[in-house]
Length: 400
Image (cartoon, rainbow, N blue to C red; front, side, top):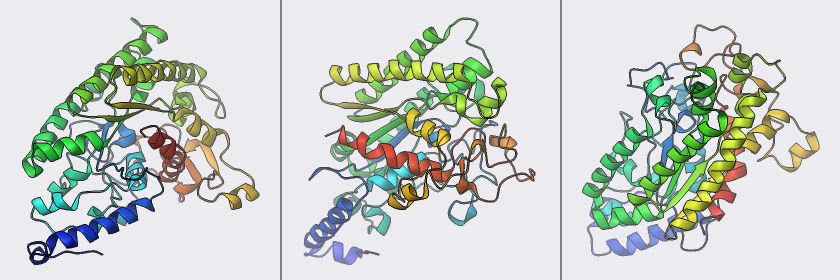
């Protein structure tokens, strides 16, 4: 652990110490899994969206869409349920640790704080903005505003009684005020311009609002509904840009028809996927990708990147096991860990999610690492690790 006392920081040699600590951090950053160009870094990761990247913002909301109870979090540090919709870490945690975001030592100096080890280039977990244990220093390296059950369609979060993307933007504006109070407007603008903004939403719009609950189907067909989603997504991204975001990554929808819950609810056979869900997801992804390219051209001072998560997850589902030879050659990015991909670990794995996935269910599996899905809707920690490992470098490369 690297520790600098306040006495040292206030001495005449403090800036020399700052220089060498910063150099150490930069060296550590170059060893990160994600390779960045020289003199480039992401000082913070700021996330918006749904349950895929919600680390616990729903915990104190009056909603059934929450999971701050076991067996959620059983494989997390200390076996503690944090509100993450998973047995352990979620997608945003792996993005954050892969990036090894660098916090300027001078910012901590302004805060009159001695930097801790995890503030010197490594942040293993991305905290929830509404988390009860959030610290001021956490704000400088990023937080998640995501809310499980949310979506681009305003009806989606309203039906689930969770934070809409408008709510998340309101909280982000509040966050900006806090950061400016800590380090000033100039340093805040620097963080905003260099940070990675990640948006993952849309799954609940298609799976729940359109197909399962069906409250939009009487008015929209799939092409029209995906137009509505993309229009809303575009407006949200433009608003983020207007608030100072310059590096924005947006993920498409996964193969929704292959999620265990959607297979169950659509009535398809166990080993089959619900193709109407998948076709809707692919149409949405195509339109979203095109709109991201349009925004990238419209705002030359920023960079908008589309992330395809459809194919990596579908590959996991269809090929949960590969040959032992392939596993030996590529232990970091292998599907050989998985044995089950058509149901989740929690309960029967076919319908359990949120409050239905609880300690009273005697059928929950012992080893979630062998499952692609933790519950009937969300990937397991290991599946997230594999997927993020596949897409993160390609995503980052597009920013430079």
